[in-house]
Length: 326
Ligand SMILES: Cc1ncc(COP(=O)(O)O)c(C=O)c1O
Image (cartoon, rainbow, N blue to C red; front, side):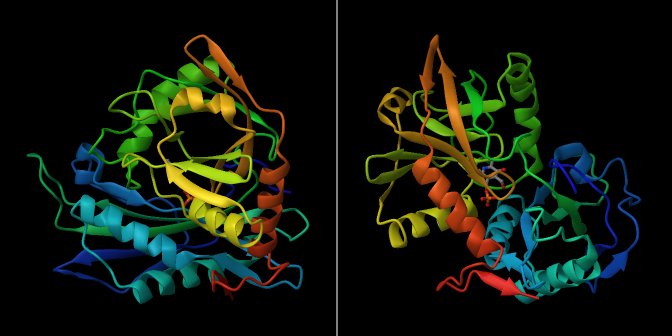
């Protein structure tokens, strides 16, 4: 059984190039290594975007993809921000289907509750010296089986706020670019050294409101409300958007997207981190400025978790057209 969120090998990788003004036909390759100029815009100036989605194995052995069209939309928002040329939705989805099909046997069993993690990316490949956009790009998709993101699955985690920012107020926080994750490495290292699982980033302008962690959005439950932060430096999580719909339609919760002051955490009943990799991971502690906010109930979060996973693994049918069956 695969465990943890790490690279566990792959069968085939998809690659295609952008050359002479258009995306070329792609290939499936056996290798995750490529030849790339050390002066490429991706290496020198971080012209690199990516996505993350999962394929799940259902009880009746179908392979299910969760909302790949939403990943396409976000991928295109990221590409526009980094001057990377668009591709059509069908080009993107065809490539995803090719990779999943070529890696079908790597999709973990239904019983294991693992998934095949799919990582589309685009990097600028042209050698540049002055700061400018590349005119050639590589689109790739790697798929590998994974277990849970935080080391113990639905086990509660501990977060700490940090004086560092992962994104600037009008910078790149709302898109999925490599640079955001480079910025999060050092603060995460400091947080884990102090025994926390990750940082909870505050809004970079005032440092008084909650943004998100390095790889997840935040959701809170207060009475019959599900509340999630509104900020332009947060990545719009597809998991979070899906949970907002499920919370309203299945659990009758009022869903609010608004700024959340850090000291408001005192009033929350439950707090969770959500994302494709983390699903919903409950948060038991948030340390901030000498004070620890504590949470010990995860009743609603657990219901949401079960609901989302039942849809993703095909146990219940959803009315939204989110699940693609292969
Ligand atoms: C910074 C950040 N926030 C939130 C998320 C969750 O987004 P999603 O639910 O689309 O995976 C991710 C993961 O992609 C992330 O890297």
